Length: 208
Image (cartoon, rainbow, N blue to C red; front, top):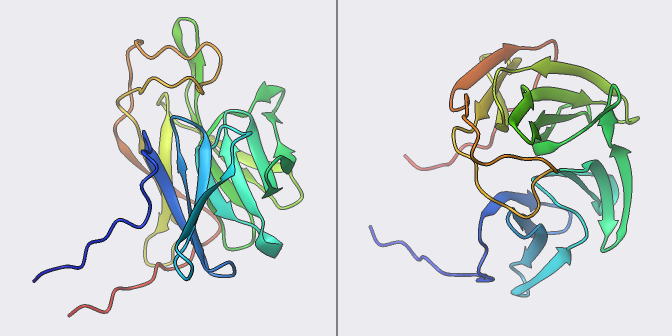
């Protein structure tokens, strides 16, 4: 079968990640991890533009009122427009909150995977953090890896949280201070964590 493959935007992303459909804005948002830029594409008009360049962003979630939640090396931020954002959480128990990827939970929480690097390599394992809507870091789950890369709810009741980790380290000028790209890595495994909250099912493709 021939597929109608088209390029709808070509901004030379060095590491395009985290595509997310915003139904209220009828747009797709995504990021370039290497440059820290966040883009939007509006299919109806064909417009593609950079909407954020002030924050290092590793993950995106939808927020209320057309806003977005960004996660990155400086924590979690509620973003409204270019240069206009509010920091939700920048530290956790006195430590900087360095976020790699995020996902929104069914009750408005934000789940974030973290990573911590120092001059000699991994200072501590990455963790899975839950941040409640009021900005409280509700819980953290330690993982024996340098970098948590992504996560998804699953299982029959969607109370299992699956977490992927990274076995490779990619150089980036936006990495946290002290990040050692050449240090040995212990990541690469898929983890499953039983939680006391539930996610929501993904949409199902209608192909037979």
